[in-house]
Length: 439
Ligand SMILES: Cc1cc2nc3c(=O)[nH]c(=O)nc-3n(C[C@H](O)[C@H](O)[C@H](O)COP(=O)(O)OP(=O)(O)OC[C@H]3O[C@@H](n4cnc5c(N)ncnc54)[C@H](O)[C@@H]3O)c2cc1C
Image 1 (cartoon, rainbow, N blue to C red):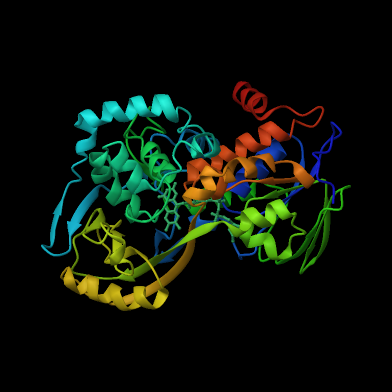
Image 2: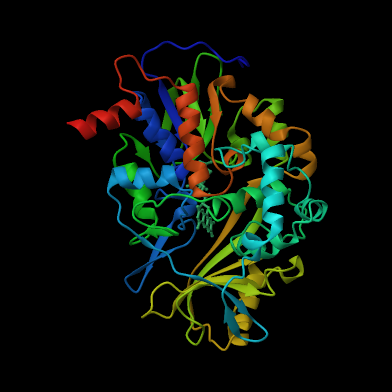
């Protein structure tokens, strides 16, 4: 295997992208716009990855990623280019399970003197946190989040952003997860820095008819997207990339892995460096359950107190979304083992005065690929960055970018712009947009 980054001709490159989630599809779109020839391989029967949508009684319910904030400039640009219709998202509420009362989120941090201290800290220690990627801020924010909050007296930040962070699958603030992920999440809510209006929305928005619509549109414009394909082996002998799939062999100049490295490791001719990094990746066991459950509070995205407060509540429902006023279908979110989630959800619903009538879909996720504190201090994300281009292989997706759609999109675009110059005679994506707008 060739371990150096090889010099490449100026002509079109043949690229295999593994994974048709937001990261892989964005990378493929960017590559094709730069004049390269791309084949996307996806093991599921449809595209969209963790942004899948299901239909229940004629209504679209998002199983995973769908909420966009005013920090989602690149995603909004993509939606604009593809003419995807968007709408405001439902309001947020804290729902106290014991008292059965709903209230607005206090967000006291935004009016607290601690916010000024946080901004000074950000300026001094992690000024690039809002930029695509995580590696630039990883060492400064490697400490476990609870230790970091205590060390900087940012308890009001934890009180304001903790319930949403935990409700969204990133873990409990008393878990050992590095502060990096909490701070990135808080920044991406758009509440810490003023953002501009996007697609006519001054707050959070989503895709009308389900978020998978966006990814299906992206895929429809690509030349070669293959779903339901199992990758059997990936060889990188030096002169190219050879991928054996259950429907035959493929050859290319380069490989973009838009899947978490540990998912592809079993079939990859991995180097010791790749093997080591893949072995350090952690995930959260997080679940989405779409169910008919009448009798619960309506018309909001509810974060359940005290289930979002401590990891001892693992298994219990941490949040639910009631999206359509005339429907009793809700989307519930929980952590833990599938059997605990299945046992505790009906009890949580009953405790809130509702009834779990019918489960339509239960989807477990290996959510939020991340490294632990020790590995971040040790430069795990820098090592992943240093692997970009080695053995003709590039890595994108939640691990280097963070588990949010905008982060996946921005990272994939920047990766392609940095490593794949436009093939000769091809307009850059920016030139092409300019030309399309003026013609
Ligand atoms: C419940 C939930 C709620 C979320 N809410 C939000 C939200 O509101 N806003 C937001 O911005 N983000 C949200 N996210 C996160 C967002 O969905 C992800 O960050 C985003 O989908 C990551 O994109 P990706 O391309 O990196 O990975 P993925 O979406 O995971 O896509 C990876 C793709 O690779 C495929 N794959 C894996 N292994 C292989 C293999 N060996 N061969 C071929 N294909 C393979 C998978 O099937 C998948 O299609 C949520 C996620 C979940 C699960």
